[in-house]
Length: 531
Image (tube, rainbow, N blue to C red):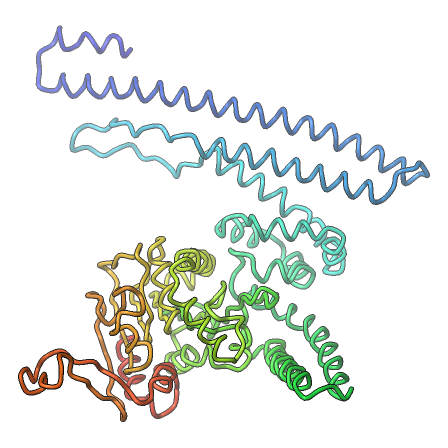
C-alpha cells in the first residue's frame, strides 16, 4: 500500500499530495520501527519464558525432595532453606532482567494519522510490556503475604520470622505506589487486617498503602516496641545501682532518660494521639501525620525540620511543634512532619565539637539531592491517596530542612507554595517553579550572620534568592555594623552594613517556636499559608 502511494506525486498534482505522501512515509517508517520493537519484545519474553520454565522444573524437583524429606528421607532443613532462598533469588533475577530489557526499548514514534487541523484518533492509556512484567513481579513478591493472611496475623508473623528476606526485598525494591494502592484496595478487609497486625513493619512503610492504614500498622509497631523499651529501661535502671564511676553513671542516666522519653511517646502512638506514617527508629527515620485526610482536606503541609533532628527530637515534641500548631489553626489542613533520611548531626552528642561537626555536615552539598529524592518518594507515596493528592500542597523547611525540600522540587515534586523558616541554602540543581509562591521567614540569627559573611550556601540562600518574598523581623539585641572603615557612617550613611544579633541562637530557635514571643511572625505566616 505504501509503495503505491509513493507514485501519487508523479500521477496527481494537488496541494494535498505532499502531505499525504509524507504521512504515508512516516507510517511506513513507524511501522518498521514498531515491528522491530515487537520483535525484540518477543525475544525478551521468550527468554523470560525459558528462564521461568527452567526454574519451574527446579521448583518441582525441590518439592519432590521436600516431600521425600517429610516422609523420612535425608534432607536437612538448612539445605532446604538455602535451596528455597536460591530459587527465590533466581526468580527475582529473571524478572528483574526482563524488566530492564523491556525498559530499555524505545517507544515507537508518534504517527501523524490525523489530517491537518483535525482530531487525532482516540486512544486509551499505553500499557507497556514493562508495566505488565512489573505487575507480575509485584504479584510474585506480595502473593506469599496474601496467602499467609488467609491464616490470620499469626500466620503472617510466622512466615516473616521464617523468611525475613521477603520483607527485606519488598522494602528494598517496592512496587510503585499506584500498584500498591490498587493491590491493597483489592484485598478483603480481613486480609488487610491480618497484614496490618502480622506484617506491621512492612505495611507501615509501604508506599501506596493509604496513610491511615499505615498509621494503624505503625501503631502495632509501637505496641511491639514498648516491650523492648521496657526491657532496656529495666536493664539501665539496674546498672545505675552498681557503684560505677560518676561519668559512666551520667551516660547511663542519659540513655535511661532517652528510653523513658521514647516509651512515653510510644504510649501516645498506641493510644492514637500520635499518628506515624513512617517509624524505623533503628535507622533514625520517622514521619508523623498531623490531622486526618478526607474529603474536607484542602491543604497539605510537608514540614522538614533542621540540623540535629533525630527520632528523639520527635519524642520530645520539638520537631513537630510548628506543623502541629498550624494544623490546630486550620481544620482543613493535614501536615506531615518528615525525618525520613540522614540529617546533619542527627547522631551527634552534646559536646561543642559534636555540634560543630553537625554544622559542617549541614553546609556540605553531598546529601542534598539524595535527601530530596527520598522526600520526593515519600510525598509520592502520600499523594497516591486521593484526599492528600487533590489538596493544595505547601512545603516548609526549617534551617537545613529547606535543602531536602527544594531538593525534592529539583527532582520533580511540585508545591503550590514553599516557606523557608530561617532556611539554610538551596541546591545547585534547583530552579524556581513559576507556579509556586516562595516565602522566607526569619530573625537575625547565627545562620543569617554566617550567610551574610559568605560562609553558608555559596550565596544560594533564601534571603538573597529572587523568588523568595522576605520577612525578616527585628528583635531586641539586633545591631548593624557599617562596612568600609571608621568614617563609613559619616561618608556614606546609607552604605553597606553587617546585621548581627546578641541572641543569635535564641533567634534561630524562635522562628519555629509557638510561644507568644513568636506570634507576630506566626500570625503573618498563617495569613499567607491559609489564603
